[in-house]
Length: 111
Image 1 (tube, one colour):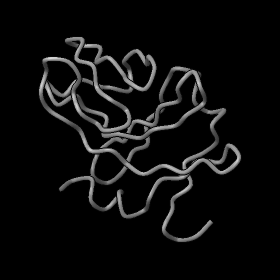
Image 2: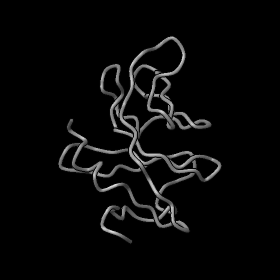
Image 3: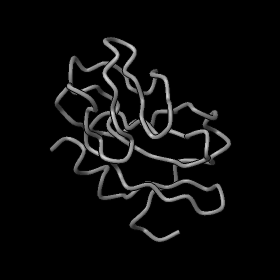
């Protein structure tokens, strides 16, 4: 693993259609696993009222915020439908089940 990536565990640590949080100095990153075993990482707060997206329901390549049902794309971080707003997406790498996120993202999360 090169120094540009930070190990965050194994894909088996994340339930299907679920999420786990990675705590950083700049806040939490939610790492999601879809039903198709795709992995996405976004900031763990809804752009609406700051709800914990990691506790939302994963469907397709989106998550529904548990507070007010906003639907956020895991690919783009943007709110879907009539809602407007977005969260930052974090590059994530899946190397035969071993997951890592871009180290630079950990530094820029507060910006």
